[in-house]
Length: 570
Image 1 (cartoon, rainbow, N blue to C red):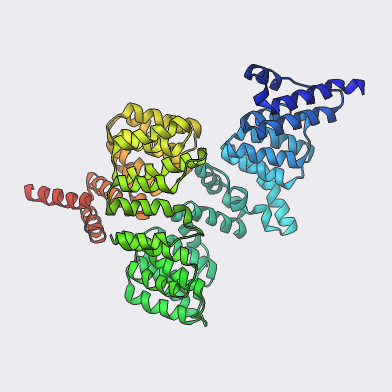
Image 2 (spheres, helix red, strand yellow; image 1 turned 180 degrees about the vertical axis):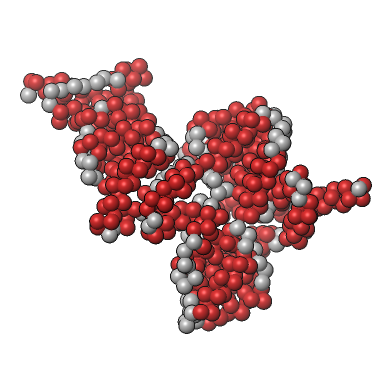
C-alpha cells in the first residue's frame, strides 16, 4: 500500500483539478502539469486515462489529445484508440491520428478498424504511398472474405475534409483494382460532393442501361450538370422498357419534369402515381414537397391542402403553406399558418418565420419586438438564440451598419461564433472596410483552417475589390481542395483568374461552374469570360437563355443592354 501512496496522492490532485472553482488558476495549471511514472504500467495507464477523461469533461479536447498522444505507450485499448481518433477528427488533428494509429497497428497489425483509420488519415495528409499499404490490406481481406464493408470507401472516408485528395488518390489508383464494388462506392463519393462530371464519365464506362440503380445515378448527375432533358429521356427509356410501373424511378422523372417546367408531363404523372395508393399520405407529402422545392407553388399548395384536410402532420403542412404564402407576398395568410404551428419539426423556426413576415407586413420594430416577446432570456442559449434571430432580420433588410453592430454584440458574449464573424465580415466588405473584413475572416480560418465557406468568401471578397489577387487565388484554391465540386467556388476561381488575365484557364472553371449552377452572377462571369476568349456566339446564347429563366434579373438585363450598345457602336 505504501508503494502506491504517490499514486493515491496524485488521484487526489486530479480530483481537485476537476473542482476548478475551489482553487486558483495558477494552482490548477500547475496541478494539471503533474506527470506520473510508475514501474507498473497499469498505474501509468490508470493515471493518464483519468487525466484525459478529466480534460475531456472540462471541454479541453485539444489538451486531452496531446496528453493521450504524448503518453501513447501506456495505452493499448481499442476503445481508447477509437475514441481519441474520433476526438482528433473533430479538430482535424491528422498528425495526432497517425500517432494513435501507428501505436494501434504496432499492437495489433491485423485490426481492420486501425487500417481503415490509417488509410483515411494518410489520404487527408496526401501521403498516398502510405495510404496504399493500408488499402491493399483491406482489399486483400475483401477478396478473401467477400465482405464489401472492407472496401466501402464512401463509409471509410465519410469524415475526410479535403475531398480533392480522395479524388486525386482514386484517379491514380482505380486502375490498380479494376473492381466494380470500389468503383460504385467512388461514384457515390463523387455524387455526394457534386463532382458529377466525373460520375457521369465512370457510369458511361459501365453497361448501365438495364441497371436500375446506375440508371438513376446517371440521370441524377446529368440533371446536376444542367442536362436535365437528357436525364428525362434516360429515365423515360428505362420506364418504357420495364414491365411494371416503377414508382421511385417515376418519382425521379417527375422531379426532372418539374425542374424543366414540363407541367403538361408532370401533372398527369403525379395523378398516376398517387392513384396507385390514394391513401398513402406519406407519398402525397413527398410529391407536395417536391413541387415546393422546385418552386411549383400552385401544385405544392394543392397537395399540402389535401393533406391538411386529412389532419396529416398539420404543423409541418402549415409551415410549408406559410412559406408559399410568404413567397407570394400574402403575409396575413402566412402569419395565420405560422401561428398554427404548435409542435414538431418546425416549431423551432416558427419565431424566425413569423418575425420575417411581420417585417414585410409592418416594419423592423414589429419583428424585433416579436422576438423579444417569444424568447425569454434565462440563460446563454436563450441570449444567443435571440441575438441570432435578430441578426437574420437585419440580414433580410441588408443594412450593413446594423449587421455589424449586432454581430459585434454577439461576439462580445460568444467570441468564437462563426455565424456572427461571417455576417460581420460580409457587412464590412459591403462597406468597403477590407481591413476589418480580413480580420474576421482570418479569425474564422484560425478557428477552422478547413472552413471552405470562409476561405471562398474571403478570396472572392478580395477579388471583388481587385485587391491582393494572388492571396485571393490562394484562398479560393484551398476552398476548392476541400469542396472541388462546388459551383460557387469554381466561379470564384474563374473570376479571380479572369481578373489576373488568365482567360483560358478562367473559361475552364467558369464553364464547369455554369454547368452546375445558372445563378445570374455565375452567368454574368461566364458570359464575360467567354467574350474575352472570343466566344461571342456562345456568350450571347447563354445570356439569352439565362434571361428567359430569370426575366427580372437586373444583372442579366444590364449585360444584355451593354451587349446591344456594344453592337451598335461596332
